[in-house]
Image (cartoon, rainbow, N blue to C red; front, side, top):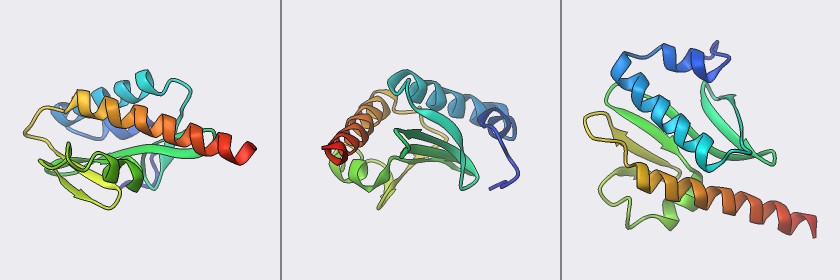
Length: 124
């Protein structure tokens, strides 16, 4: 990871065209499903926060794109993610397969609701 990257545009430009297109597609999906999220770079990768809380992250690698929706989402979508390599808070999206847009859309919506619910419960 390049810790000198300051913007998501810079980050994406650092990848070959095919990978960059997939990263752009994920970015567009996040922006569409979480329009109030704040985009930035954290831990050397594109990061999105909502109400000051982490929403999702993503990163490009040699053979996959890492999508980091936090442990709550990976656990909640365990069955739907069965075809992907996962860890506690991450999903590996192979570069040789299409981006699972419908699934990512559901995960992002889940995270928006999860973060919003947690923020509201702390305000009470």
